Image (cartoon, rainbow, N blue to C red; front, side, top):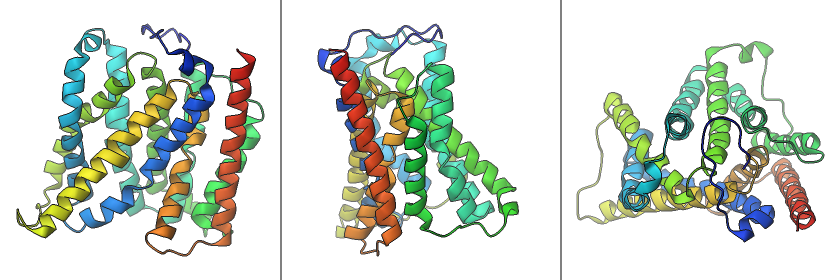
Length: 325
């Protein structure tokens, strides 16, 4: 990663494989984002017993049991953390996780549902703009066309061939602004994540993301005031909830971000934000295979458009790697 004159010390030691093969990192970002799509496999059952904030809090508590020993082992890295790194980490853990999710949820409840969903698709634009401003990234060849195709594919996955907004005034409301705020925070988190994996080990960044979010999530859950509706301890229902909670924490939670940040070490943030579109495509596959939802021709077309773009970008990354050998 380039020095972007932020005063942060950039980590220079990378493996030869990472430096010479950005294609490898690109597909790790794709895989990490795709793992987010398995979230419904666990969350559907958990929502029968807990609120979303309670689930996320317990998920972070479970991951913290793994993360805290990692942070202790890498404590020498923490001694070199400055205020700018702290700001970036808080942006990732508070802004990209908790606050963005809250804004998006509020947007859904206070605005036109389709307008909120449509504006959320602008997340890659925020990531690309911030990557250019903060990381001084240059876009790959034909990136603008590829981005339009990928966003069009995402649109088809969500809305099909229909225009979901009845009137343009649906955009001019609080819900739409909240959705844009969430999209900006999610896009910014991609950029901040790319910045931080150039400063610290991947496992340290991942661990800090979850541990730093715990106090905020605890306050949110406490302020929510909802009762805990857990099954009786020792019953089969309690075992089922526990297994789903652990699966939720370790697969779409911890493992996905370890893989994602590992890939981000050699992937530009502007490219990574398109690689993240594997998330909605994985979600469509899960809904089709597991929940037996009908997949339309428009969704299949959108799926193909996204993956064609991913393969083109991957080939570009491979060409850059070979040219640099």
